[in-house]
Image (tube, rainbow, N blue to C red; front, side, top):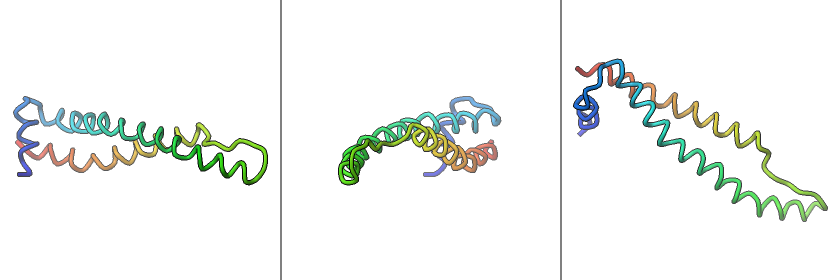
Length: 95
């Protein structure tokens, strides 16, 4: 049932103004684990491939720059925040 999560939020005693903030905050907090895990896992999976590429092309060390990790996290934060705005705005319509 689609109204069950809304009923839980309403039952918690939140006002109409607080509901979107709570929903956006919860979604961003939960998805932060996914961004961090994805960036770390991506770095770990890229190391062997970049090491083999570095050995193929001669001496040197290839790696993922730190700014790429930061940019990925910032973009994912923005996309997640943007995706939660519509459902959060719908919560204000319920009594």
